Image (cartoon, rainbow, N blue to C red; front, side, top):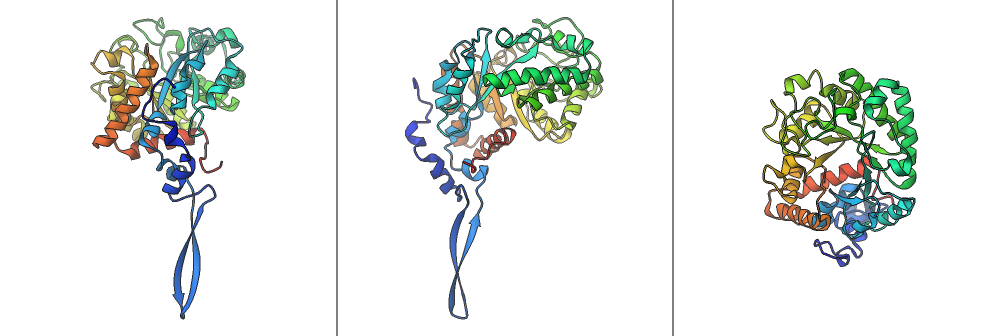
Length: 389
């Protein structure tokens, strides 16, 4: 496998069964005899303890839980390069590049069979249309969000996303890191503006209707959409991929950037990406590392789904002095369910991030319950029942 994260094949031998026993359940539920005496007659009864994802996950090693929260990057021309990380339990794979071939479907299918605990990784790609569309060469081009917003009705946008989602699912992509819900009318995307044509509109209600339509089209096709970048990068001071930047003040976002997210949450869409921007009036650092930002999304906005971070290797994170493993721990402590990165050596970054999370639990700075809860969120988003197999 090339390296060890502390998650070894021997650790997983029989773990699917052993974990259930440790959790006090079986696939069909367990029957534990109990004895009571009535009129000197011994009567044996049974108590059934139902199996659940929580009970199964409680038996997983901490390192396996940690690995399941990490998304590893790979070039779409050679996705098999992350086979060791998937074999070590990586929860997701994100495709980069634009060199995917007709072999992609088979390559991704092979990757999905490698997870030692039987939970295939999420396969992710940025398929927004226009300037950000990784698989355009293989699946055909989509117009940019801005073009969609200017030329198509929400119903037409939903249909377009549905048709493209079917193509994604056919090659094995199960999650699209789209749509962008940011409200922006400026030029871009660029080193100074992360949005530009990635935004459906500079009008909040239009961006909301079009973004929700795009997400619903993907969802109807069987692909999980991701709403980004909370709480809205439209009008931001810069591009967090390059350097630290801030959003508009929270007081302004309430009447602009948050409106599309309110609509999407109301539509019960499943996944939100937390941005790396500072939010004046809410956070003093990157939202992706701020418990206050996650609390705002959960408790003020009422979002109960899965939360993924923007890249932990972005300039906004690196330039405040954090490594990817350090930022990963900070993000999970704050409330993230999954983290992403894109480094020169993904294998090392993945290994070090799993170790960092494992050590944080061992030291008491991060609870195992936090990891279990996040893996539960991932499984719920994917409608996976560990007790059903």
